[in-house]
Length: 456
Image (tube, rainbow, N blue to C red; front, side, top):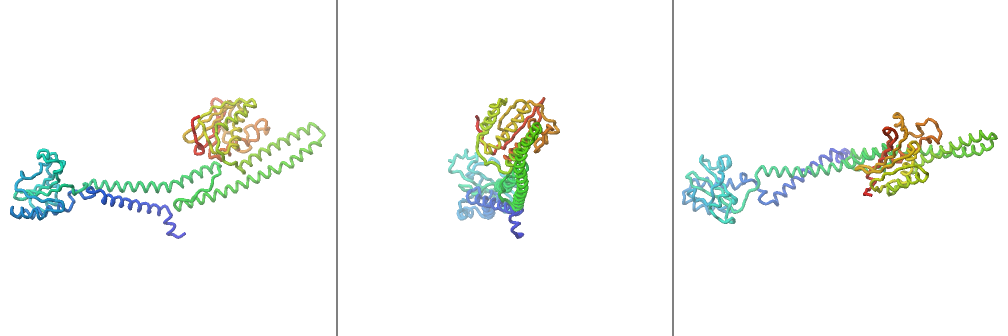
């Protein structure tokens, strides 16, 4: 990839491109405003060219005689502006303005007139003083009256407004266009950058807790695309290593079954019945352990297809199976949740959690609720709990708080490890905590983006 191509696709290139686009959009909006907004698009009255013309005409009239002024006024009228001359202020057909313009309001005209006692009056159709003259509204007009040195008056009037917004208002309009274009482009630019970053962060979080994720789509600026490509390659490499480990342990567990079967047959040749029973018990325990290992590794190596199901009904089924065997399990259902996941795997995880609660606490209490972020299932008991220092290790494969290896007192330490692997595959989290004053609570959280909820 050339330096030019890298720059165009990089964050710097994107940023410069979006700034240029924002400026162009602001210019287009401003040009559209000037083209279609009519009078508003014109400069304010102090900046229009007609004022310079009016000042020049007034200065010319200042040096003419009254007869010359009357003869010339019709010739200089035009372009929608009517020019009149009046010898006295009382002859002006305009009302007295509410507020006379001060000496600083019309610097350009005063500079052109070049005499000290010039006075300028401006009125519009909405001037309140028109009421005293009693003209109908349609006959009112805009006018500028300029007093000459001999105290006569020149008036420039027009039926329609020829000037637009003030300089401050025009600056605000331009600033508004720039602000709108900048916000629009920044929002679009932010989405283009944030979406792949958000997908990247979600994938990293899911992969960090053990969930398998699909390769990420390569999109966004060059730097983000390179990071996504590196993550995809890393994910494939790590998953390959994990799959190799799982296949190796699965093969070992599978191959152990044949010699265990031969040992079981040969144990029948032992004459001592007591020793034969002990050997058979050890072989049965080994076979049970091998079967547990195979189930655990098969869960890792051949994940179940995703299916849409009702989570509350699945919980009911698991709990009914325990109740059918005489176990005490209470269930407090919450909202109805339709979930996309692996029903058999989740059944196994929930069965492990409830079985532990019944085994160590005598009974289990299961709750289902939906928060604004996730689906929460809790399984709690009234058992002795777990020493705090042992809690972090409960999910380690083959770890047991109970030190003996007797499967009747604690299994092989694979149930919780398998349950957490299942929950992690769904992008969720499984935690264990001691209750007060005694007992243990297992909290299973599944992300809400895989579910739709409705009141039961």
